Amino acid sequence: MDAKIREFFDSVGSFFSGGDNIPWCDRDIIAGCEREVAESGNAESKNESLMRLSWALVHSRHPEDVNRGIAMLEASLDNSASPLQSREKLYLLAVGYYRNGDYPRSRQLLERCLEIAPDWRQAQTLRKVVEDRIAKDGVIGIGIAATAVGLLVGGIAAVVARKK
Image 1 (cartoon, helix red, strand yellow):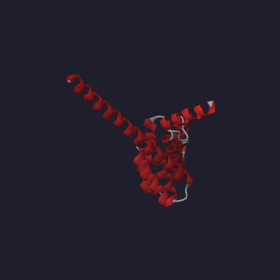
Image 2 (cartoon, helix red, strand yellow):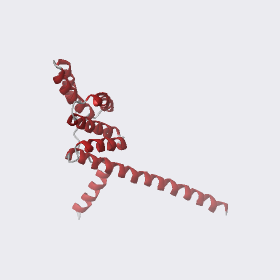
Image 3 (cartoon, one colour):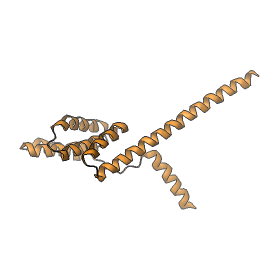
Image 4 (cartoon, helix red, strand yellow):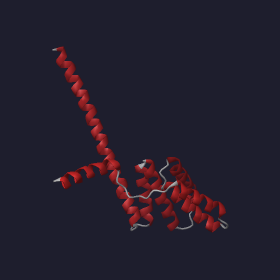
């Protein structure tokens, strides 16, 4: 019985916490990536270093880092040398927008990413997480609206009952 109760509360907790498995990145790793970019010599190594920095930024716990990563990726998206590079940048942008709570934009970028590589499991998994989050936000929104309507109807009923 205790196991069933624990399982119930765990499922409720994961419903409200989000429960995604996207890795986080700390500021030390970001600083190391920034040093790597500054020390990179040729254009190819600089591009690779910038991709690692973008990855670190969009996986940060700090919104300002995530926004910086998004800006870097959006600025470089048109300069992608191959479809593989475009796919990677679209995916990282989707992660950044997911971290910022812009789930519709994240889903849109994942769809573009999956047009390039339809069988890419990482993008499929993130798309499922994003779609679940959009559905959950809708359920919470409906619950808030229903509560507001219930309070309004209850208030009107109380006023009518007092007048009689």
